Length: 487
Image (cartoon, rainbow, N blue to C red):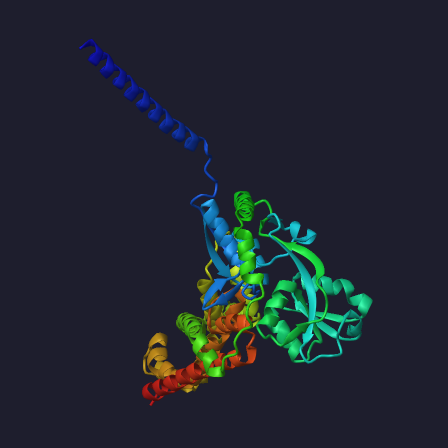
């Protein structure tokens, strides 16, 4: 019996020891987990600006933004526990958006330079670039820098290619002009407006492999490195997370896998016919057309209200109201629409400290601009009615408002309608300018398409045809409404 008790006691001791050890293990794991500091960016969402057309670093494939930069920032975000919202703006616009705090950071194949370090804080370099020169495929005269004497070359604005071209232009006596994106530069060379292009070697190699009509004629020149940028002194935790994530991707081999995916020589793009291009492009273009119509519709409605309101102010007996209307018209008719778009999207947030989304900025720009022109249409329409009509109404005992509503306006509307229709059409076409601030309307979508397939002429032909169809349908509808209500 005693032996049995001793045996049971022994089993109990072993069990207790095991439980204590197990509990100790859990405590140790918990302590270890507790001692592991949580990243400062965990759970945060950051808005990241990028270029629109810089393949293979950022470009659209089947409507989705992809490329080396896009894979890197998304994988780093996943590795470090934060999320990113990508805004495809264009290189210059992305930098302006960063400075106006519309975005938290920029990754856009951006070279780290001493000048930019004065404005931005950069991550560790994530890609070492270089520059090459290319000419049209059928050009046999330009084979080196010494053949550029007296000629014009093109480079992307703000790029390493532009910096290098400017550094040797005096030595070889050529002129450098800068354009906004690679596809436009390549077309400039093919059209004969420039004899050569200087571009970052991976971008140039990608374009040549996609049948962009060029050939490289020089070896790669040593360039600077690309970095992820934030505003000077801001978002240090995001910058630290990027560096930490980049280091981990390099250690794990994921970084090299991303580079290999885009930089290994791919199979040349298969040339499809015009209708093949149309079929591939139509989904993205129709999405852009939808946004074009949305922005146009909202802008026209707001502009109509503004035009009628300030139009009445213009013909008011009050000097204050006339001055207010004249100031509004002078400002928005006297400044370019493009400048207004930049001001509302980039300048206003800097002045107010409040960010504004691209649709709101676009509608604000278009409606205020169109409203100024509609103000003059309303003023002209009212003043074109014979003053005797007003005098006749007043002589019959009608008040000013009643006279305007029952006598003057019915006649003025018939005069104003054709001008209103013309302004509607102009507003629809003006939406194309919003592409510069990253509004994904029809023209923007077209730019995205030819940036990756380099079929600029055909793509723009499709875009122009869509504008033509929509504008003509809008004009026909407006004319029918005019005939119906102004018989």
